[in-house]
Image: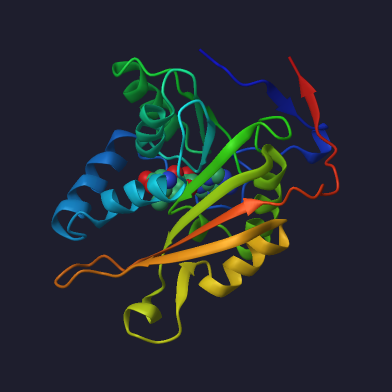
Amino acid sequence: MHSFARHRRSPAGKASAKETKGLIINGGWRYDLMGWFHDTFSFRGQWRKLRQRTADFARIQPGEQVLDVGCGTGTLAIEVQQRVGRTGRVAGIDPGTQQIAHARSKAAQRKLPIDFQTGVIEQIPFPDQTFDVVLSTLMMHHLPAGLKRQGLAEIARVLKPGGRLVIADFKRKQERQGRAARFHAGGSSMQDLAAMVSDAGFEDLETEEMQPPRFSAFPGAGIIHAHKSYVQQPSSEAETVG
Ligand SMILES: C[S@@+](CC[C@H](N)C(=O)[O-])C[C@H]1O[C@@H](n2cnc3c(N)ncnc32)[C@H](O)[C@@H]1O
């Protein structure tokens, strides 16, 4: 079932779900139920659309290797597995053990070989240059700024040169009210987040916005698409096992 090699670092560098400064969600099936309720009655289907748009923006091809960071209950990863087909591989990590348990159960029901693991963006449990694409939806606002930078460096590490990153996140309240364009991403504006992505070794940045529909509580969202540079970044201290 597991298709990707494992990866670990020295114990001193190890980060676990218990130690993360990120805001963990652990609702499992309740998360999906609440999500469906909010999306149907408050967001008018925009959450579902955001996931679709993220997968579309990534231009996923059959046979590709894709990682969803902060995958929650695996809804996006399941959609992506259908896009990469039998020759592709999809993995998802999240520190929420019940999120991962529910994601595994959903994949098993559909007989999809997705590699869902409990894990954190601080230390993504895969070797360098494993993935063609890394995705993240509605996760960055769960992280403080320093962790965003650390996490983006980890994403760059596990992406192949030229690999694609797509990050989608809610806009901040100010943006809904027409003030400066800012994500709700723990205080990061869209421009700040794009700058962090660029600093982490990504280029060819493209952004798009999802505006809130009328009579909807959906706060609007921003999506960033970027390529990992082909220029070699300083190597990590990663070590690969089996
Ligand atoms: C709002 S949920 C979004 C989940 C999923 N991507 C979706 O679109 O439904 C944010 C997720 O980020 C996860 N998260 C929090 N801290 C994290 C970290 N340090 N590394 C990876 N994921 C983290 C939470 O556990 C949660 O499942």
